[in-house]
Length: 106
Image 1 (cartoon, rainbow, N blue to C red):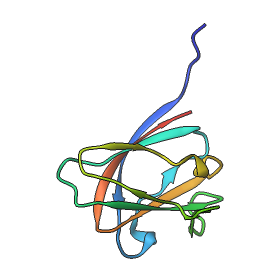
Image 2 (image 1 turned 90 degrees about the vertical axis):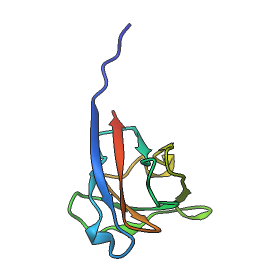
Image 3 (image 1 turned 45 degrees about the horizontal axis):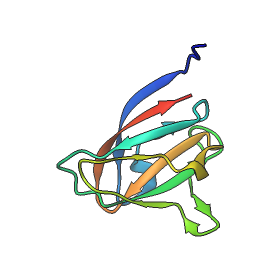
């Protein structure tokens, strides 16, 4: 049996300063996703923020261990943390300004 999934690919801006300058990811209809860090990127950490509605107020995402932060390297891809599965909107802050590609799967 073949199951159909919706997918989306987006390029987003990651800002090291104000989270308002990072691109919003519409995640509500998806179950998972992957972040692709370009080979020439200076990003080494991604700090996740979430909002209950698109265009809403983004808050730093936390789990039982603390802030949801991923250590990343250029030229690699990483899953969106499962702690964020119920979020509608996501944004990423980085250790430096940059961009990443994100694929989403519902």
